[in-house]
Length: 564
Image (cartoon, rainbow, N blue to C red; front, side, top):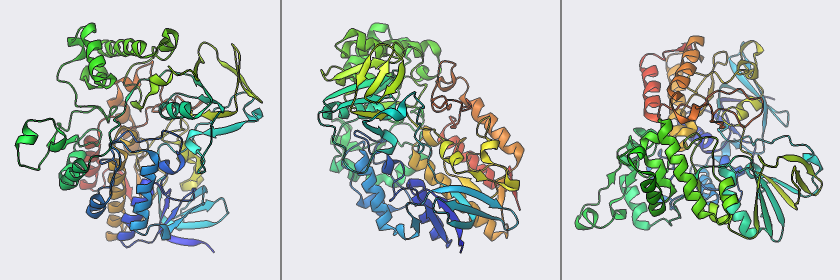
């Protein structure tokens, strides 16, 4: 017997959980299908040592419930994975979400039944579920990239992926551990792995620009001040390019106005201050980096940290300014790493600061001063093969007990393409996206009526605070479904011209930024996955601009969409 719902939601991460809450409250019958055994999405799967969010905890939180905002305590300014997962579980418990979620249920096919105007999902257990609307809440970073290396299947030790870390504790005491990859997950994991392992060998493909993360514990007075001002903070998020309020609690400001005033209000950095690529950077400096001498730049970094390089506007658009920042970064690294050769290998030279989402670290460069850590530059000595006992490069063999892949994700499109989606006339999404993703507002694709994607390609998604982006998408979709019902309409999909025009706009606004320079190869472009079309996928125009466009489309009678 086929199970029937109003809405099928695929995925029970933060997007899927809020979608369930919102659509259930609209009076819709909602079923959520989740491959894991519990809620949390990204934070369920990414349990690797050091996993942590790069958005301040008080802002990386739901804004739909005032009661939720007032009751949850965050232990750190930037929370670690276990605390974020606890938050997800608290939300699921508080709003009784699990009763409508089917766990350990992986979708292997989605098919549009045109005659019935229904979507049919087939699971690994060969169960079929149908609904008028299907909402893909599968996440932007949910399919680990597993590189095909020679001999990979022959390794007889333990193989781990940062994006599929076991739920059970992993004991690395005394082990010879190798990790491939120095992107965000690798940078976060490496210092923790070095503390646990007998010896850690880091196999670096491309050095990374990383800056120290805020390590502070959450202060009760700061948390309370956020609670007192959350209404204003959520509004500020809506008007910031990266969906971050930049709210500065008065009590956290140095002596002066804050301590001399009896007011409990707060100040905020201007909402246009942060580029989307540096969500956690301090407020941008008023001057340009080219206004400083090389000596002044280095002195600034040595006095206030590497993250000061993120505060200059010209670094993100002016190649000369960008290279000035890059050179200062390299000089700073050389002073932080004891071995000059290692310091040189850790310094990026083939691409610029701002090309990729900014990585935050804790003790990353200090880790390479440890006696039990070895850096292998795979440009100098490429991997020849994985062996039964380790990795052989062109220079030598590295004996390992544990091999960890921190090789990133098939981002933005991976989970959608793996779902084996067929639209009208049996057309496959894989065929439609053969040359890169084509979608209108990152919400829908022509030929796939009533199928919605939360934070899909062509939306701000990974270039913004994901919780803010998620809530905006879920609300837009919910309002759309309600509009269809109120007006006795059965389906919605984009006009072909609308999605083509939107993709062109997404690429146009990305021009002139560091994201799309010829030297930039990032997962934003799909460059980390062999054979994947090179196309810029997220929307760099800023969250407010995107939100306003979505609102304008609705105000104009769902302009660019075909309603039937």
